[in-house]
Length: 353
Image 1: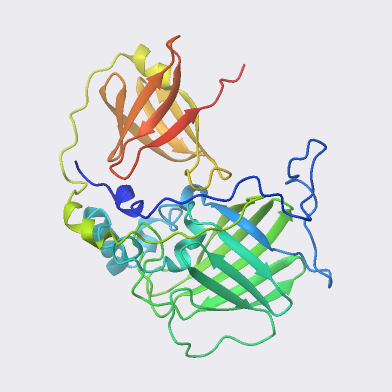
Image 2: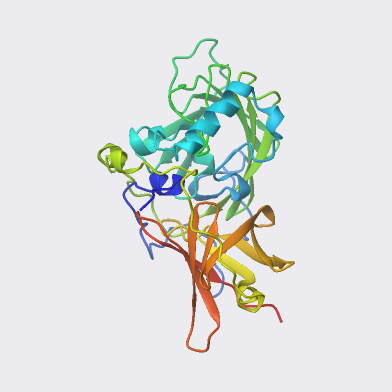
């Protein structure tokens, strides 16, 4: 079976969260559930308190942080390298194959929780992959020549209710995102953390690496609090031993498109909800639409892509095989994205009346 880019990235050991663990200080609704819409908590000095266990919802940037850039806005050498890594299905992805930390790409990875611990002088971020970040809040400046590290060196300051963090000093042995954009010694990342309420936070992240991109750009990442739970270990499963089996390429032939009646295809039109099994609190919506007899899929309104039918219930989304299922009444209930590291289920939302 051909191993896809997603499959390689997903070969780490699955993990779970503590469940039904009421955490003191959590605002609750009358029925006892966490009230994620309650006001954001504050520290003794009046600053927003970012502490908590957070799940990432990267939206359209989960696979490619530069999704909004035009092709010509990436330096040619970097664009060629991304293309090469795509052709190889990401089989050299350092965090999947070499078991290295994800580095700054953690802000766009849905299946890694982040636990924020805020003190007056430092914000510590614990990562499930047994790694951590420190954002120093004691007024120090960024070092001129920091010792390169996977998470970089970060200093922060408050601008009103927003924490602004600047980071440099990243190792160039890791990737900026799952698409394979490279990191160079000129990379500087500015993050603006804004806690909207008790259960929601946004990070406006600006990437500035003139050796890789021709201009700085900003993406907005959403985080949702994971209430009444706790961080657990996420340990790389030594994927090096599986590397030799991951030899598929996007250029490998996919099944030929089949003629499927529009009446059959129209049954799949709708919105589908997905969450990684490790992080079910952060969900994404995938919309399947139909135009001129063809099906298309988008991610929360972005990255619209054609679906290729190869059988009545099987369609291809780029290199991913999707199988659709129905209930006893013949109503489509979900589709499954097939993978050797485990199938992922996308559940159909009720149709609007």
